[in-house]
Length: 356
Image 1 (cartoon, helix red, strand yellow):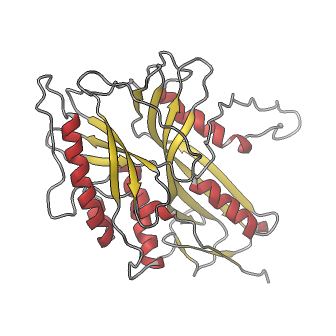
Image 2 (image 1 turned 180 degrees about the vertical axis):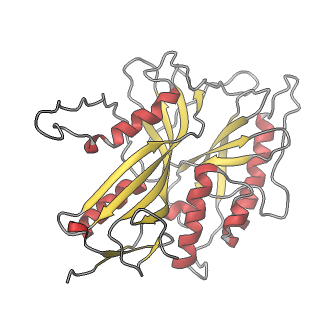
């Protein structure tokens, strides 16, 4: 009889999951619809963006106390919702009495508001994030979007500098009225890569170790390996890479830990920086496949993802990875990850839904 392998992940959900989430919608007031009254007719002004952040901060702390995904969905979207809803599920297990709750504040905000006259519209904020479990003074970039004039501002990306080497944030180019200069995702002017090309290039960089280095069988040609563009800090503080290393240490020799990344259909947001570079925001997904040698059954415990009760022969952990990437000007400049947010959001058992 094969021995049942039982493995638990003690800290697979990132500790910052509750620190970055939140937004207008849970404070008893409606989500912000702050808009511009500028002569140019822009969707929102820098002053309006400040109002959005103020309402976001108040609602964020009330929402974090509730830990309800249905409330979260009223003011967050995309990968931010997936990551923070997963953080709520994990927190309800690890801290049922919510002893670790503490308000989060956003200090010294710097607003990056492109002048836009149509929808969908967006803007970003760089702020110092402070809270009970947040050490040092990490920057967080919050990206808000608004689908139409009647829609609410929704927070969709929240990468932070926590866990990355200390670095000076790039300066975004602004005009005399304080509006940031937006870069079209397809515009590669002065850059090594167009902003829209960065996600796919980063996937290749992250998954380079998975690429075949020899023919699948004798007589076939050696697979052509794509050119890898290195991303500075690109493998730092990613939850899926951290968890892959964790499982590698705890599964027996001969087991499988295959981490693969994918681009998404979500928008890429880009701003021109002084000197001609670009500050780019986007997200990827990742899937980490786990298996014991010879498909032996095993159980897996991961707070909010796997309960460790039912044996499986393979498990897949799904992740969302968010990035703020600085691309300096120049044809040979290497992209640098200056902020990210990453964590497990769901799981699959034996190629399908897990038992509930």
